[in-house]
Length: 350
Image (cartoon, rainbow, N blue to C red; front, top):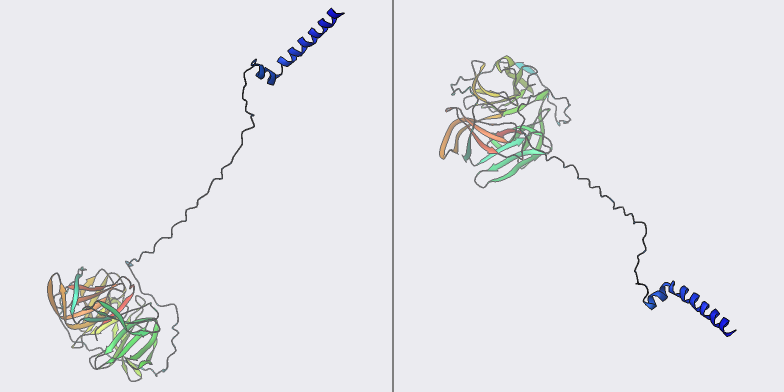
């Protein structure tokens, strides 16, 4: 009995020991198994990094001011809106121009003007069309100061000072039929003459009379009139066949009444003197010749030398520069340039 009980106890102990050995923590306690650290594995995390879309703005081109190589005047398509304060009765009288022949130097090959500085007089006046409000600018060569002598509410194409009374300024607006008067210190005196069509240029003649032009560029022959009271007398007819097919209305007189013309806003452009009723080319340029103005005893500094121009013509290039053409030597000088202006249309002295 004791032997059987002993055998049963031994069997139970053997089974228990076997089970204990298979239990991992007990195996570790008894040193029967080396501890192994395991790491749980999970499906890899999928991370989507947003892709930034950078849109580079298309740069806006910087406007570049360019000087047109060719400008052709055409008949304006718009009707002037100026309401005249007076509407004088107009009667056209056909007369014949009287001009004194002169013999200025002829230079028919387009020339390159020489850079120069105006020494005497020290102040020059000019205007710019297609700018509103506009006016007459004054540039002082001695101080380098640019200012406005007077401001007009609308675009100013042409002007002239009355030589007998410098406070009086006759002027013409762009695309207008009116000749207007402004008096310094008094202001706008309104319309003094209304024409039947576009007035392009105005000048005071040697006789004190007021002259103006009508022109359509290449559209037909032009005319220069003298204002006589409330009438417009035909002074000279400009035939396109004698002007290489184009005339924009620019003219002036010298100290003897000789008539000078220029093609105007066309490239190339010529300057003419009228002899025996016929225009003769005296010089040519590869730029427009606009707002010609007869002048005398002008002193410039050019190429390190002081030059006296006894008789000459001021003009603009219908862009950013002013010039002086010497009628005796045939040389041309660039006397002013300012790229902030794009449509310089007339130039003068006071």
